[in-house]
Length: 580
Image (cartoon, rainbow, N blue to C red; front, top):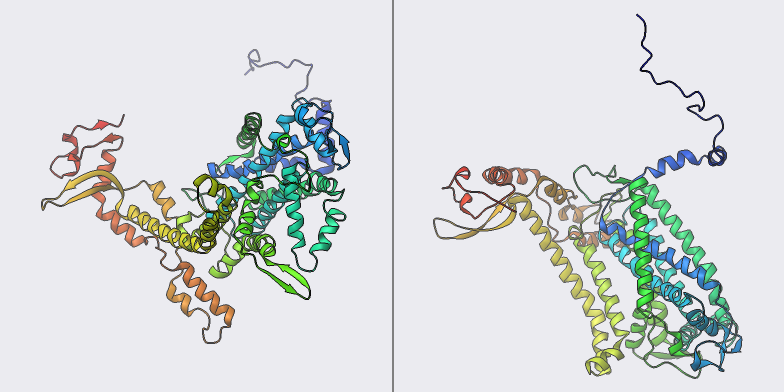
C-alpha cells in the first residue's frame, strides 16, 4: 500500500528545528548556566507557589517602600553635601540669602528650589520612610496575631524586629541630615539622652560628635550611616528575610485542600510576579502623590540650626513619639552617687524602656513556645480569636504604645482641648499601667466570646433573620447550616491541652521553680478557652438539623419569607423568589 505524501507538510530546507548557531542571548545564558547552574534553580523557584490573601500584601508595602527609598535616595545623594562647613547662602530662597548656613542646609534648599524635581524627590523620600516603618509595624502585627511567627519561623520574626529597629535608626539619621532647626533640636535631644547613660554617657557623646556638641562631624557621620552602613544592614536582613520565606514556604489560611504540608496558591511566574510588579507601581504612585500634594519637613520654614534656639512645638517623627511621651510623663527622678548626678528621668524612659520593649518583642515567639510547650512546625495560620491570650497580650502592648504615643503630644492635646497639661500628665501616668491591663482583659474575653459564637454557628447554623413563632407563642430565629468550606475553616484548629493534665504534668513535688512557673503560666494561657466541637457533637447536630439541610438545598439561590419553615406549606407549593 503506497503512502499519500501530498498532505504532509514539507520542510523549508533552510532553517533547522534547533538552530545550529544560537543567538547571542542564548550563548550568554548557556555560558552562565554552565558555570553557575542557575537554570535549574531558576526553573524551580520561578514556579514556586505562593498563597493569595490581602493581608500578605502588608509585607510587600514595606518591601516596595524600601525600593522607593533607594531610588529617591540615590537621586538626593547626587546634590546633597554632607558637611557642616559654613557658607553664605545665595540660592533662590530670598529669606536666607546672604546668611551664613552650613552646606548641608544650603544643599537641602538647593534640592528643594533649584534642582528640577528635587522637592518632589525629597518629599517622596520622607513619605516613603513613613510608609516603610508603618507597614513594617502593621506587618509585624499581622504575623503575630495569626501565629505566623511559630516554629520554624522564629528567626524570621527576629529579623523582622531587627529591621524595624534599623528602620527607625535610619529614619532618625536621615531626618537629621538637613541641619535645620527642627532636626538640630532632635540631635540636641539625642546628645542629652546619651549623656544620661551612667558612667559611659559623656564618653559616648564625645565619640559620636567628635568632641563637645554640636562639633563639626555629626552630619558627615550621620550621612555615612544613612547611605552606607544602615542601608547595607537593611539590604542584608531583607535578603535573609526573603530567603527564609522561600525556604520555609509561605504560611496560608486554613481551608479545604490546605494542610501543614502543602501550599495552595499561584506560581511566581507569571501570576505572582505580575501582581507584585503592579503592586510596586501602586506604592510608587501613592508615594509620588503624597510627595506632590502633601508638604512634609519644610526645612525652609524652620531655618538653619542654631544651638541657642529651639523650635516651638517641636515634635519628632511619629515613630519616635512613644519614647518622647515616656520622657514627658516620667517624674523628675535624680540621685547623686559619688559626686555624679544620675538622671533616671531621662535614662529610664529613653534608654531602658525602648530596650526593654524591643527585647520583649524579640522574645515573644520563644516565650510562647516555652509556656505552651509546642514544638511542632506550623504552616497554617491561626485566627486571633483562637489564641485569646496571645491576642490579648499584643493588644495590651499596643495599648501601652498608643498611650505613650498620645503622651508625646500632651502639650498639643492641652492646647486644642483647653485642658491642664499637668492633669493630662498625671492621668497618663496612671493610664499607662491601668490601660494595658484593661485592654488585656477585654480582648481576651472578646476572643472567648467569638469562640463560643463559632461553636454555635458550627452546631446550629447561621442566623437567617427569619423569626418563627411556636404553637406555644414563643418566638425564635431560624438557623440554617453553614457551607462545608466555612465549616472546615472553623474546625481547622487544634484542641488545647486539658487543664487537669497541665496541673499534673511532670513531677510537681520535685520540679524546680522554673517548671512550676511554666506550669502556672501554661494553665493561665489556656484558661477559659472554648474548645471546638467534637466529631460526635457535630454529627449529632447535623442529624438533628437534617430537615433544615434538605430545605436549605431546595431554597438555594432564592429568598424566603418564613412560610417555608412552618411545616404546613411544602416547598413545592410556595413561590420562591430569586435573590436578584
